[in-house]
Length: 358
Image (cartoon, helix red, strand yellow):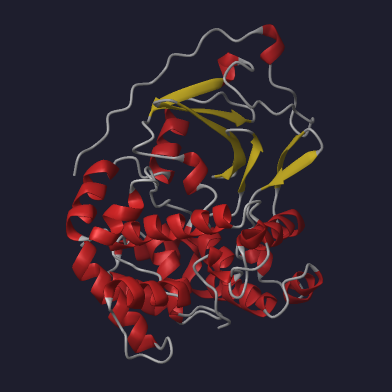
């Protein structure tokens, strides 16, 4: 696999007006590299390798928002970031005490998995699959994120019978209620994702219900407790080194985790590029465009496995990444067909991987 080489842009001297304020002091949003250039840094990253607007809005993660046209602000690794893509460069700034540097470059490279050469994968998938070739040309740069396993798991438990806008609002309330405050940009505070221990208290389920989580409150607090008192956050992270089947088995033993949510976590947090999350949308796509699982009347565990195996045979070891491209295309084409995007905001549960009630 081709490894991308990134050239670092040197930091210019810090301007007097760009000095960082003390912690907890409201800061101004920096939405372009021209705003305090000393606090910005960039990586070489062509759009064929990454399209921020597609990846950060396609239901893989729920902590980013387009804070101004082309600028995405969110929380990653207990820090608040703003990302901007300009031609072949990915610019970023980090709000906090320390300026960005090689360590923050590494965090972004890991998060976006920039060591995976995407154009070569697109070519291979297109050669194997005419449907992919027809669809993917309009959606370059869609890659799978490598997220924190705890945050990914507990977030995707919230996706059952839900849609992206509502999930993002729920996760925001969760972080405000249980997470550590990181900083404030203008009038908006930003919080870290809470630890399993913070969500494992005896009153956590009641608090989550009061925040509008409904039946999901039991599963979020139950899985957080199971992690805090058993597997541990590090144990969850160590599943990255386990085979895909074993990682999925461990995840499915947690409260509220079915095969779809487990596959989302395997794919987006546990380095299982072969994991193919299957919901009713993917099931319909598999039947309509590929003739797979045609005789199935419901999406059982057996059908889920059959469809996943079919796509793994078609797309190879990065099958989950190929599915993410088609998922993103279906989501954005649905938004375009609705004109203003109302259809996407109002209830297509397929906007995230987990659209079933456990």
